[in-house]
Image (cartoon, rainbow, N blue to C red):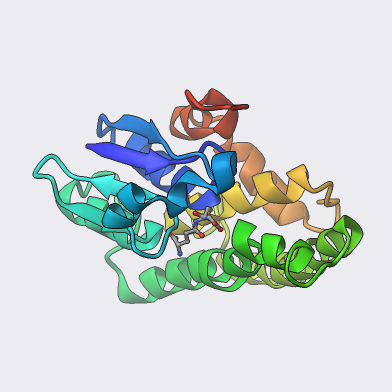
Length: 214
Ligand SMILES: N[C@@H](CCC(=O)N[C@@H](CS)C(=O)NCC(=O)O)C(=O)O
């Protein structure tokens, strides 16, 4: 398999973790989101993803897939061990709720193109961009922290690593990049600390990627 992604992209980070957990070997193809206006906007890349976003997973059969959660569901179907979305319908719904809190409600409004629009077309200073990020991260993390009170064991939902954990870790990485204080979120901190020592998460870290700091 081939993964088109960017070292600091949270959606790419999710797919890397899932591939690692399932021990599926893959080749990384870096797509630089900033260089020359963003390689995700080139004609060539748009053939892989018309939405001009990373990641794209190209399967061994040459099929290309977009949307990190759809990719992870696909991986869970073709390589069910370890299961990232539990079979039990209620537990699966809890996992998806937490995963979507991060991937559908938080990440899209703090995505690069949104921030570029704020500071570019809308002419807002970097300080406003930072306030924007801090505001939406705080709202999302408060709710997530509260939900964990009902669902958490060692990880977000019970004691197995799930899609919820895969979506949380990259958002915490991003929050830390922007200097957000995690002290109000002790459950999040504890779970992320437990996840970040697992080899699949260590190997998926942005700094461990071939395009890190490029
Ligand atoms: N919902 C998509 C989100 C993909 C996405 O937002 N990717 C970001 C990086 S995390 C991106 O490519 N941004 C480029 C841009 O904003 O121009 C997914 O989960 O795959």
